[in-house]
Image (cartoon, rainbow, N blue to C red; front, top):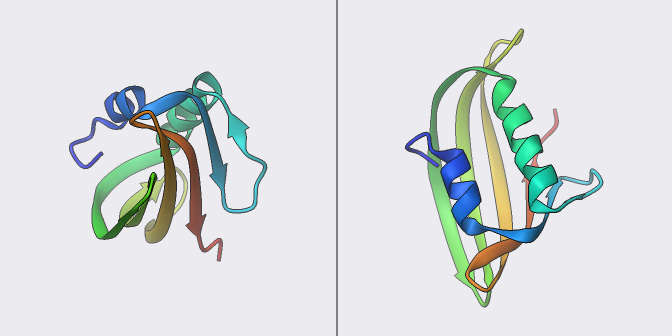
Length: 104
């Protein structure tokens, strides 16, 4: 992710039946639909200034990663965003991922 190869990581680590969810929005089901969502999200970024992993937790088939992103979205000022991703794993790939972040 930090090397700019988000889609390579997506293809390698995400299960074909992955379910992804942003906060309380309805979940997106399937790798194909989530691939498109990821691409659309990246296209909204004007400048990616960097990202940092702040914390990682690992349990039985679950990981949690706290991220801090520094980005400029198209038509918006530069901002830092903190996010926690909770990832559930099956067969060595992420089967469910939910993102938690402030929408203020």
